[in-house]
Structure formats: C-alpha cells, structure tokens
Image (cartoon, rainbow, N blue to C red; front, side, top):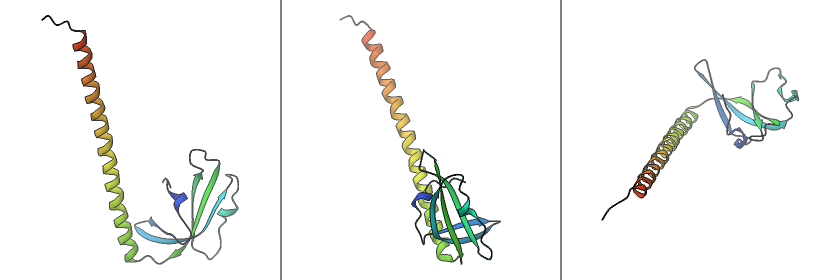
Length: 128
C-alpha cells in the first residue's frame, strides 16, 4: 500500500486499518523523520496496541523515512461515515481526472488532424 499523503497527517488525526474484514482505528500521537538505517522508532512496546505507518520522504528524494505512530481508539459509526464520504470524494476526483485526460488527448488529436489537413491543402495547387 502506498501512503502518498502520509506527510499531511498531523498529531491527533485518526486513521483506520482493515484487518481480516475488521476495522481498527488509531489516533496519531507521534510523527518522526529518521534515516533508513535507524530502527529505534520501530521497537515493539509491550502491552500497547500501536501501529506505525512508514513511507519514504522527502518526495522524489527518499533519503529518509517518515514514521507515523498511532494508538488504538474505538471505531465508531461517525468514522464510517467520514470514510464513506472520503471514498466518494476520491472516486469523483479520480473520475474527473480521467475525463480531463481523455478530453486533453481528444483535443490534441483534433489539433493534429486540423494541422495535417492544413499542410495537405497548402501543398495542393489550385487552378483558378
């Protein structure tokens, strides 16, 4: 799984994981940037239900690792509604991006077609 926007997460944000069809909610309490060889932030803490999400940072450089750690909180119906709304928004956004790309490609083909016609007409000799 890619964590593309993990760098936008702030302390006290909540994220939800689905494990074996069960939703588990976690609240972010620690965010740190470490070198790839530094594993101190990934130590198991006994008697604590923690999850650490890891991604490379900064974007396109990937010289460090971003660790976002959260502790378990109860999953409630309000979270489910927020996730559903977020999923709908993301689906609409993706659909609009795809439509935009298709329109852009179509406009490029139209422009190319008109240019080819213009060049062919310019090469033709017309007798009056």
